[in-house]
Length: 172
Image (cartoon, rainbow, N blue to C red; front, side, top):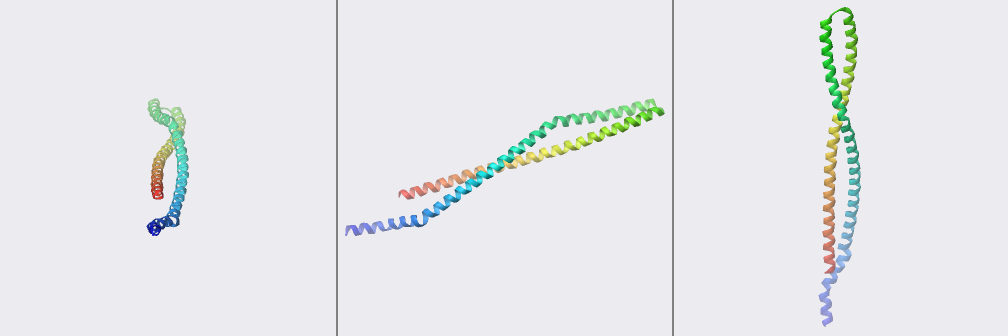
């Protein structure tokens, strides 16, 4: 009689164990596998993002190295304009046919130099745009890396909590 009562008392525990073995544990194992795969995917994504960030930082550094040259070219362009004004002033003071011819040659060279300076100015503007774009991309990548790290941390905590609950249930 006592044995029968003990068996009857153990019946809910046995049913619970069978449910855990048949349903809950396989579901949890699938979920752990899924989360592990998700973490691996996130790690790969993070690696790609870190590589892109390194490449962009390298490009930004190259553009920053060009900045002093751009400043120097701007200065030269300003000096060139000043020289052109001075030449025009001096030529107007001198007058004469031969001076006009010399002025034409000087003016042609000046125009050529101005075209080169303008071309360099356009290149500088393009580099500035590249710097701006690169800096924006770096900020976006840094935000994405931060988000991925946050997501990874959250996923790890959830997995840890589920595993802890599972172990507590298993002990009971």
